[in-house]
Length: 456
Image (tube, rainbow, N blue to C red):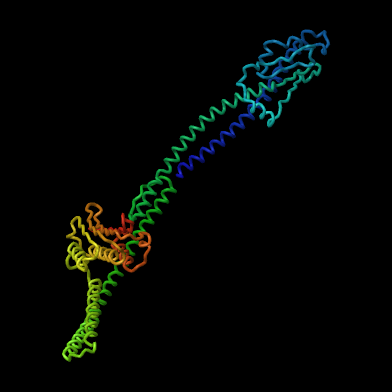
């Protein structure tokens, strides 16, 4: 899952938790606001009745104070205005059949769902009535009792919650959208870093990254650039070391070829001469003792050894590209394999592009890759047809592509993991040239492709 989506999902979870907390807080605040409205209503009505009480006391001073009760004059429209909606106020001591004076409770908010009306009182409890004396200095003036209407309280709480949640939802949606855009914008440079790492995986270590505003991303970009520089330096050192090892190995090959030619070649020639002499002498004596037959067998074995030695010397000596050029050496290579036996598979040579100016290590590497791949296909497979294609890709990526494909079957994965000397040598040469090697399954066999960059 992408990091942007993970952060957005976590942000949405946080917003949902905040909305839930806001809903709980709004429920508690709205439910308890009825208690505050009840206390305020009782206080306002008590103050109004206190003023009425002292007004009656001053006008009717001849009456006893215990008979100066603000009844029934207190039940007026002005008193109704002092009572909050959903609250009922009662004066005590009340007269017979006197009903509480209630504020407007019909049409207050929307009808709450049953689950809300059942849960809220269970968790938040019921509302308590509020008692206020008409006059703190005159207990005989009576008291005001304010009682909230439970149904009206729940309706007002539900209405308040709906209003708060609507605003909270709009704010949450806006916050989630803006925060998501901000997160996406902040993480956008990560694409450039990933692209640089992918280029480094393909061998393009010198990848320049843009300057990031974020300190963390700038540190990551700097680390990636430093890593690319170190990888390129290590790759160059490894390539130089590999080239040096290949040069040493080629020198050893040439030295070994001289030793084989000088020692084994001369000894084999001497053995062949001795065998011919024995065969001739035996034929002159006309003796049928098998000596001539043994001499002929020695001669045949010696010829076979000399032919094998010549093949080994061809492989050990300097490759033909240094003498004939890449194109002519490839043609000579294919012709030599074709001339060995008519029973061998068909070898098709396809040369594309201008190969005349390719020389030096690139030409030697290309020739060795083609030589080893043809050898493996001919000796270790049951191929009937082998295709050797050498193509020069011009342009910015000036490179030489050598592809050998056969129809002899084979397991590409097993061959790629092989640690044989021939395949190991190919890998070393291609790596030293800064190229790449791939072994993939073909339609009916294997396909070995090597890409060798051509230095300007």
